Length: 36
Image (tube, rainbow, N blue to C red):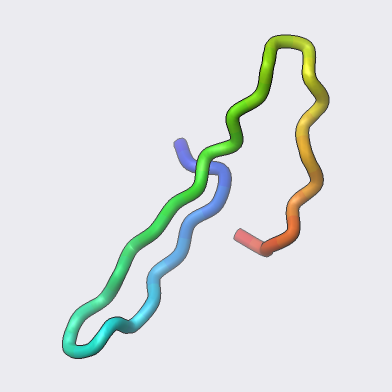
């Protein structure tokens, strides 16, 4: 469901993050700066 996601070490645990692109109808997808 997410456009990009990842898992990072945080102290004794882990952090799971995700990003979602929000576009207006008819708008072209943006280029990706980060590998998923």
